[in-house]
Length: 578
Image (cartoon, rainbow, N blue to C red):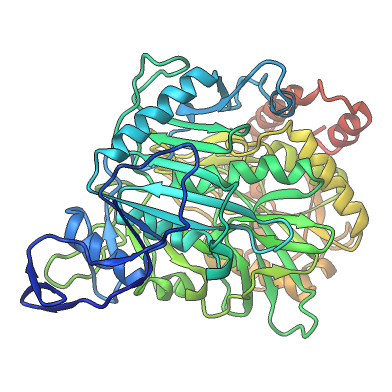
């Protein structure tokens, strides 16, 4: 076996490939053996193991060995994730062993939770299947890096994979470790990505050829039957969602930015929302510094980003509407399932023939206003983004503390096309903490921590912004979402303080059975967007649909009634619809 470190010898290309003067058609460059290198629970027999390869090496290998990877104009790579072009939440498993400490921490009982249990025997069989597949490959890539920018709370991660694209993705999405830190990389959480190889559906707890399995006791994750890179990313988030609350810190499915005009950098905003709500797009603001676009932790010291990069949706991406993301797609970025012109090598962001869930991974340093290290103070504003496919909610509302807890726990939105397998149009859904597929504890555990944070930082304002449909629900005759420029104008008004001045019954009003406080006006946004009932052709139909939605909220909240803190349950419930 050759185990490559970063200290590799130079190689030169002149016509065919030459290495140290030897003519070769298909060889890997010679390298210095990293003798202190060890693997946890695994004996790799793969001929070539590349540990923490450079960006240049991954580009080279991707173009040489991966037939689905190409170089496009601007220097980014474009590749395909195979059959799976989105996450497979129904195939996610967590190992459950009776009597173990981890079992008591996990919320197993709810029907909607995708944390289906599996036994340790089934997990071991999946792991051995993954290792056998890895050992059959000619080369394997290992990425050792951190999850988290806070040096006191970050998690060691080791990713073992076979595709250069997966290694490059995780190199982007994790936080780079120093050479000194890499000398001792024991006790890392290991991800075995054998996604090109299916699981055995007859294995205990399996129902298909795809398996995303996590074992908190052994600190391992196994991926079989899916090459979609997002499974690794969200696997890490699930892991952090277990460990952070265990130590009293609130993990968040949110983006975060900070005002650049504030010398103390105290103008911090958190954006909560599921994929497709605009979390990445709206937090990438040229007037503000980006802390991160998707996953954070709120500690006693402030906010830290879990990730080292961003994973943005690309469908209909344009330089005009999302300039920061558009400009981030260059050397070092990798486009996933995006079609391109084979002659001009220009990506076509309007093409959705492969999937609507086209994506791009890039280092956060590609964003010109990124704040590195990705740390901030406590938030001044919190924004809940909802892609309301029913056309019920106003474009913006200010929430009371009780409403903030209620909407945090409820996490109402609509899953949009392409985010998960089988989603073709917006589907209304309640996703606790705006990230139910990734939380591990009971949702009210996170709500309890959220309540403590809001009480501790009383000046923090919480807002609900709809980026969904207006006038009537999504349908064949009505596909108009709230224009992104209106959402940006609303957020600008929040940051300037102008929106706060427009709140209150003397200027705005409280609308509908949800009792949401809306503003009187915002320059640049039509007033009708603050009262969607006025935009429906039949207001009686709106009233009926609003009440139906209120009933759905109440039914959803019944899932949380068994929490051991009933005072908290009643407090949160008081923020719901009448």
